[in-house]
Structure formats: structure tokens, C-alpha cells
Length: 148
Image 1: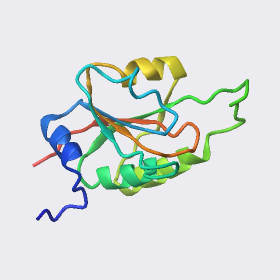
Image 2: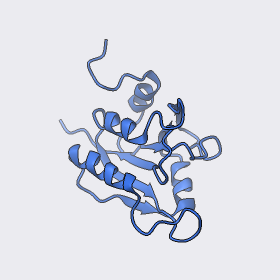
Image 3: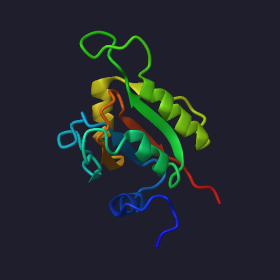
């Protein structure tokens, strides 16, 4: 029996193979998982139903298992049907959870199509599909170093 909060076997296996500089994508239910999956990424489907499991549930649990060096988000549209006037509310949640895990850097917004390219790149070790329905709830984490 494991004593850690993270017990999902596929996630543990993928993280065990990853290392410093490897990336983890936690994505919302609108993300195109099958067409934007990195060539080395393990896809773990936690999208049980709309709203479950949430990106923030996954992030909170992952932060008990890995150090985070960088955190990137998909830049929101400023025009069109999905346009926003300010940061999506989910980004406030990301910042709160990351800060609680001693992450001190800023979220890095990446333009939508550049985000898809980054999240489908060879450094992505793990892609986690969630059922989160909040828009712009995609987070690309870079794993940091565990110091002795």
C-alpha cells in the first residue's frame, strides 16, 4: 500500500520514467487528446464525465509527487466567441495551488496553436485527460529537480 496521495498506477509509472525537464500536460475536456498527443507521452484518461475529474484535482495531487520548474497555460482569445477580457478564473486556481507547493515563477501564457505544438512535443512524458469543462484549463508543467 502506498502512503502518497498519488496512487493512479499509469501516472506513477509515467512519472517514474520522467525526469528533470520532462513535461506533464493536464488538459480540460475540450482538448484534442488524440491528435495533439506527444510521441513519447503516456495518455491517462481521467475524464469520467463532464466536470470529473477536474484539472485542479489532478494538479493538487501531482504537486505532492513532483517539483515544478515551469508552468505554461494556453493563452486565451481576446476576440471571437471564446474571448475573455482578463485571465480565466482557472488561472487564479492554478496560481494558488502552485504557490502552496512553493512554486514562485509566473504562469507562462503560450498562444493557442504554439501551446498545442509544445504539448504535443517530444518532451511531454504524460498527458492527463480530465473532464474539466472550464475553458482555458490546460496546464503544461515542466518537472524540476529533487534536491538531496
